[in-house]
Amino acid sequence: MVFQKRCIACHNKQPGDDAPFGPPNLYTVFHRDPPLTTEEAETTIRDGKGNMPAFGNSLTATDIKSVITYLRTRPQTAEKPE
Ligand code: HEC
Image (cartoon, rainbow, N blue to C red; front, side, top):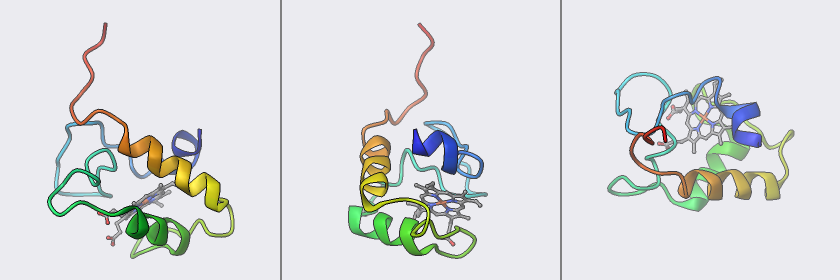
């Protein structure tokens, strides 16, 4: 999975972690007010932003869309271990 391989080194916050420092918690960015849009996320992932590297040369448009779909559908709060 692209997220585990390419993103989690920096975006390692767990669901429910709203600490204001470090790279943003990607589990919540699509649910904040106002939410990050799919278009904004695509642009940031493709072209980079601030300390966020650009992935336009290493990920296909399909990879970028699937990582966004994955993040959008994660739970917002810490998952309780079964
Ligand atoms: C080298 C560390 C690093 C890696 C690797 C990284 N990011 Fe980021 N990312 C950041 C930082 C730092 C920011 C904040 C940029 C800013 O706003 O200045 C950020 C911001 C973002 C944002 C915008 C969040 C917002 O609130 O606007 C998205 C979406 C994002 N990253 C997705 C990803 C995805 C998907 C991957 C893997 C393909 C990834 N990042 C890999 C460091 C990283």
